[in-house]
Structure formats: structure tokens, C-alpha cells
Image (tube, rainbow, N blue to C red):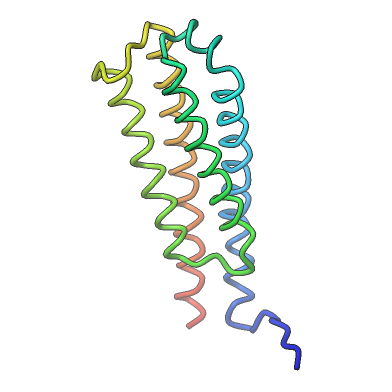
Length: 147
């Protein structure tokens, strides 16, 4: 016996309002994957430019590639689970704070360009976090309104 999942009347509005969140997740996934690839593929030249050790750049790039895969997976769900969307917002917020901490705490021997690189990354992640939070609020508000 084969079952197909058709959207019910209750999930259709949630899917419509989840379009914004889904788009932001997809864009975040692509940009995170690109940055991960850059960090892995150009670790040595990037290290000489920023002071970032090659091992750190490669590890950070692999972490970003994994995160990009998770974001793409979540964006591809027929209905985005609010718990996963909240997790994305929380992880992105932690990553943004982590970039700022790494930039200033001397955990990694960065030069001025390296500090700027991480601060720009933190700013970009903060923008994604805000957009994803907005999408989550829209999605959960529409579900609450339809119940």
C-alpha cells in the first residue's frame, strides 16, 4: 500500500508562511557552503592574509560545510518543524557570538585583516539569524492563528 502526504488545510497556511523562512534557510545554506569551500580550498593563502592557522581554517570550513548540509536538509522539509527552526536561530546566534569572541580573545593569532574577516562573518550570520527568527515568527503565528 502506498501513502502520499498531501498538505491538509491546517498545514497549507503554514507552508505559505514558511516560504520566507525556507528561502532564507536556502540562501544561508548556499552562502555557508561557499564560505566552507573557500576556507578548506584556500586555507593557506587565507591564512597568510588573515593570520588564521591552516588547521583552524580547514576545521572551520568543514564545520561550515556540515552546517550548510543541515540547513539545506531543513529547508527541504515539506513542513519545517518549528523546533528545528528555533535550533537554527540558536546555533546561528551562538556562531555569531563565537566569531566575535574568536576575533578579540586571542584564541587564534589573527592580524587586523583576520579580525575584520571574522567580524564581517559575525555580521552576516547575525543578519541570517534575524531573518530566520522573523520567518519562524511568521510561520508559528500563522499556525497559531489557524488552530
